Length: 299
Image 1 (spheres, rainbow, N blue to C red):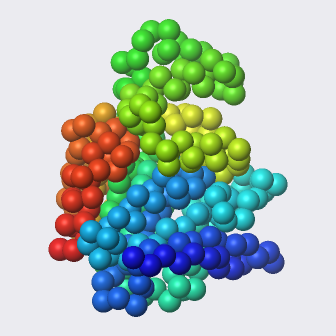
Image 2: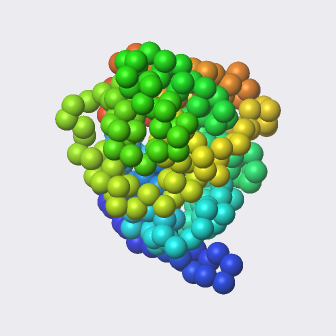
């Protein structure tokens, strides 16, 4: 199973940045490659690199990359909030596919990557895209937050009160708020203890540089103050024509409230829920997850 990695130039206005990528398998093979859009925003590809096993098990070439501002791609801590837009990351994806001479392909987006993937399909209408996987994601930030609030309501009273008070008082950068968020994350982001090594690496990278996360999302998984605050493509989902696999976990922070509209809105959609998983079914139920995804892509 061959691996190649490198960078491609990504020009934005008068500036040139670098997008780092890795290809697992041979892009010249007869099988369409799968392009992975990681989440965050601003989480490097490390936690989703387990998807490379689809190359070994199914012969599917896999393209992983770090979106601008994280991982081994150009870091841009100095850029203002307005710089970080959906359009920027769509342009980056277009550029990467062109530089790698990828024509026909499948796309898998996890969490933020799923919102980006769905937006990309709607706005760019890529002719080469054949199949779409939207994993643990959302079509509306309002519904994402509303779903998370239903989960917060089930947390211990002191945790709930800390979250509400810190958000009300604007003290979301405090230790007590982060500790309260951690209680939520251990129930609805990933339940494994110890946490998988690749997830540990990803979180460590985010803690070093949360520029993109703060600009697009905000201070916690359930409180959005960034550029995707008003994100909502629910009314446009019927325009997605590709066969689409929708995934979430039973106790996922991507609740049924925010995942449901994807299933109801996309005409040719299949929804699979993982009973023993939260937001990372590829870690929590890997055997079933990769069987479901692989079978869908090869259909």
